[in-house]
Length: 264
Image 1: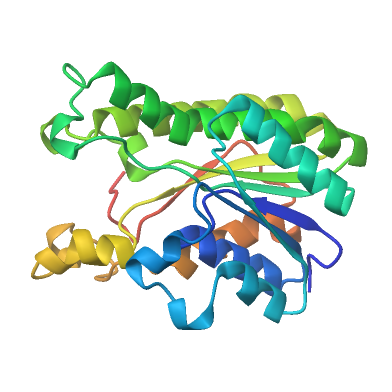
Image 2 (image 1 turned 60 degrees about the horizontal axis):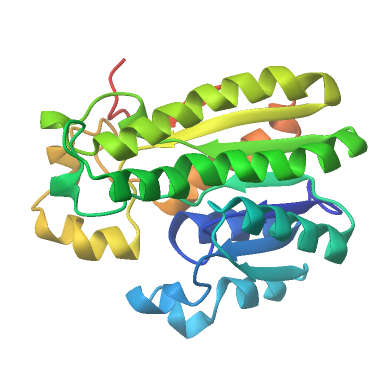
């Protein structure tokens, strides 16, 4: 119960990796604010539908939960979400910026041709949601003299993908890495750490259905050294490191959580 008495806000937490973050931090004792553009989106992929929403699962662990449905990539909505969190709990200690994803068709995501609409939407989902939420929690964390922020990049933000696909997404994720470094320098004197994770190939119900089910051996095709896809909780374990005492002296870092898929 290392996080008992703490309040954690997790964006994009209705399903997938965000759900795993919420449950892991709840098991550590934190009260959890679950954000998503659609809190019922887990039903689309039948993700733990028989166990109810992540809000139900968090509360079943004996901590408090608050669900906030909004677009974290819109400045006013991100600010309002943090204000509602403060109204309910009086504090915010941990922010995990998990919301993201590419807008438009992957075949249309090339650097030289991505549309303005897809580029803007991809940046809103990834980079702007990260920036707006970080800005909204900065002052409350400064007042408390303590805070933990974990941003989410991607292996696509660390190296260009084959043939240049995912350029809009990769560019947004690369910007998140650099934003993390700058914010860590600014907030460090206030007892706030800011770090970043860069997952690679993670097995979630959505990706299993849309991508991995069409491949004979995803781990071999992606040349993953550990010879398996990541599970959402593999990523959440690293978040636990960053937000508990284990990571007290680590800030401004981006850790690739890839099973050895990135070889540099």
